[in-house]
Amino acid sequence: MVEIDVTREIRRAVDTGKVVFGVRQAEKSILEGKAKIIVTAKNAPLAEKEKILHRAALSEVHIIEASENGLELGSVCGKPFSVSVMTVEDMGKSSLKALMKKK
Image (cartoon, rainbow, N blue to C red; front, side):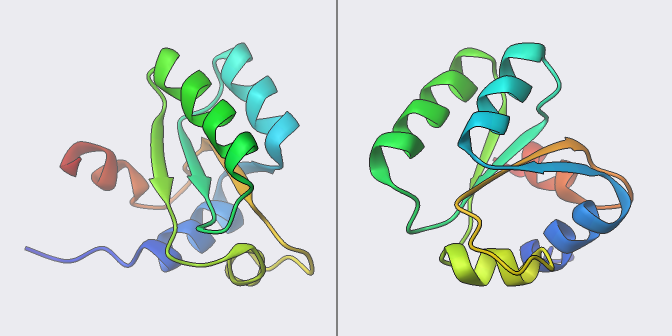
């Protein structure tokens, strides 16, 4: 079985799919039914993280907690800022869907 490199697949989703960043954008995407996967940084603020996790669970959106902190996750995404929450609306050519089936 091939192990999926989560950071590589996150970057591929950013490059080839549709991804939005931030808590408010995540909430909006969940409410509109566009969110497929929510990725949170390991150091995301707890109150915001719990709110997003709760909404995602109600909408049956898959959640991935990245092993990177916000700055590292921003770097993985090719952004010059910290990313605490990102929402994948279109996976593009990434294999993140395989992670959804594993968990």
